[in-house]
Image (cartoon, rainbow, N blue to C red; front, side, top):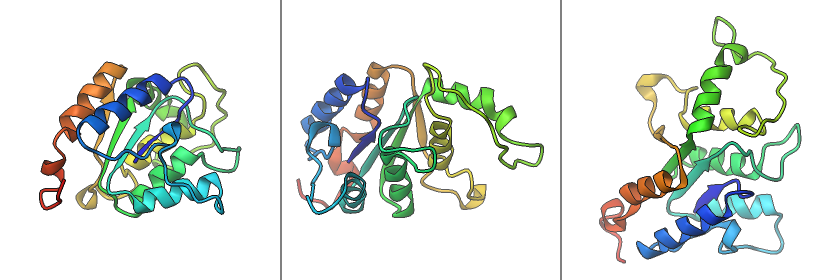
Length: 184
């Protein structure tokens, strides 16, 4: 399953879909309408059910938080990521360089001297439309888990669509290497 905010990223998502299919994966992606959908459920429910049923989760964190959000609710993309972590899904998470830089720049305003989160008034920018994008990044890194107990926290930075595609190829080009006992 590929999870990402969509708007302004459609062409790259199409390329990711084509690359993964070329490697032999059956790709679930809401952007390409390949996500299994049950009409009795909401978009949120269908996306979370797909995370539960998928064999592998590929998450992409960009400067866009995603749809389905309000000031009090998380976006679909954020909830998918949290669900994949909670279910301990085999996952690969990629984060845009701008998000990494924004996190470093805003860290001094987001946390006090004891590492507790402070309230921060944030206005959307062209690089980051919602401060919760940084929350997604930190949750993907599993920063709330003590370092010695932390696993499943690999998050790879990318700078361009070409860089992202190259990294996806490096990690996922050999499905047999990921699932050696599985028949393809």
